[in-house]
Length: 178
Image (cartoon, rainbow, N blue to C red):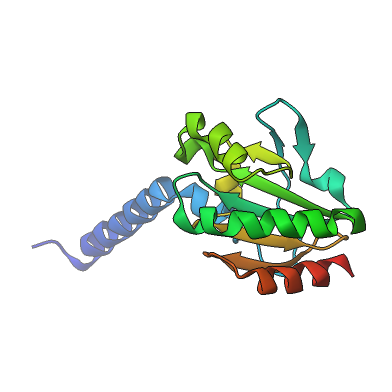
């Protein structure tokens, strides 16, 4: 049987080995993970293109009220709220509202996007998240997801899921236009 000193050395070596293993095997992405976009914080910036190749950068829209809506063609609530999104855009665009419809292209069928846009007669900018990076930055949990961003670039309201009633949509848009 090992003596007291030998046991202490063994316990110390086990503790050191455990510490080294924990340090080397820890998930470094967890320590750098950013919280999901929240009310009162700056909206995560992105640059995406429309199907026609026009580029939009969120941070360059500062001074405008922006509604960022994440959606996909296969999503029934997304389809249900699109007509209201278009009506709200038509009604408020002259007052400084920008609606950015971010298609989660990495989760969608790209061949369905153009027919979708045509079916709903969408005239606001529709952007393609082909890599899924914007969905990750916004920690997308459910479609549709909408972010109401005020003229200072701060998130005023977050709505996860849908479809959103037009009256609620109107109220939130009027708030970010102030």
